[in-house]
Length: 92
Image (cartoon, rainbow, N blue to C red; front, side, top):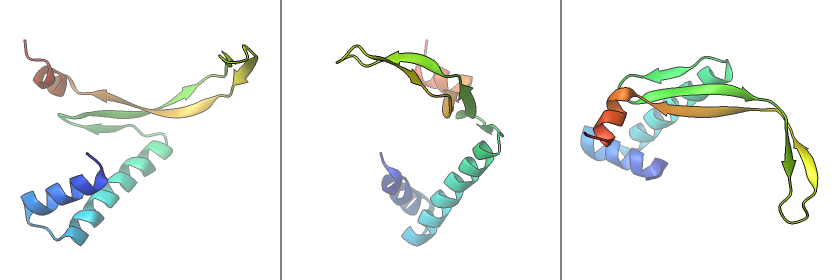
C-alpha cells in the first residue's frame, strides 16, 4: 500500500473527495514530521510510537574491498507498534 492507496481508501470509506483525502493525508504526515523534527515523539494510541533517535558514529567496512571507513553519526526515525496492535497481529 502506498500513499495514493491510503487516500483512495479514505475517499471510499469516508465519502471524501480525492482532493480532500489528499489534503488530510498530507497534513497528518506533515504534523508527524514537524513534531519529530522538533524532538517530540508521536504516539498514536492503538497503533504505535514514532521516535527520533540519535545514532553514534561507528566503524564500517566495504564488503567488496574490505576497506574500513567511518559511518557518520545520524538521526533516525524508529517505529514501535503498540502492545494492542502487536496482540492483534499475533493472537495467542
